[in-house]
View 1 (tube, helix red, strand yellow):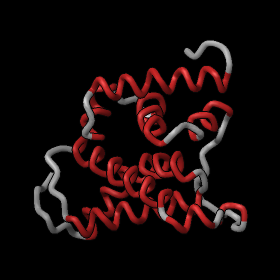
View 2 (view 1 turned 180 degrees about the vertical axis):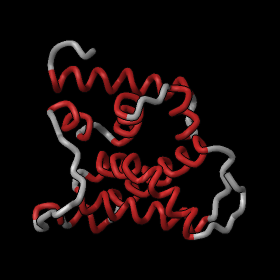
View 3 (view 1 turned 60 degrees about the vertical axis):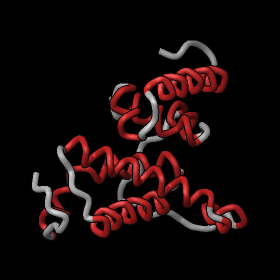
View 4 (view 1 turned 135 degrees about the vertical axis):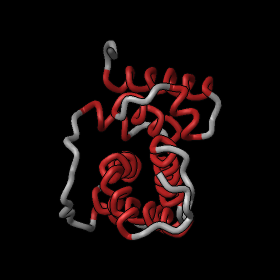
Length: 163
């Protein structure tokens, strides 16, 4: 993987193809609708092009994209416009990819933001707590604590034992 800050269109397209589904799912978990998730996906890759970040490995590349996408979504959700107008009720969605949403995923998407990303990366993307801690630049103990607290919340929402 080249460490050049300037990438060709081909390199950007390859990075996009490798990570688009994961980044979309992270964005969808935050934004809760396909249109906003697609916007955040595009913004994430725009930031990649603009920043020209150099990556040491494919894992570093993926971690950077997940972190940027998560931060963009959080910032978007905090924006004053989003607090005053709920566009989700007014727009019909025609997305090319909509994940199948079951009761568990709905409950995960309903978690507070600090838990949502951690739970998604752990259970849906298969990362361990050390990898998530590195991606999100948080202590490993914080990630384990978030997972524990999120399990308690999910247990109350869903009832019963979570395996």
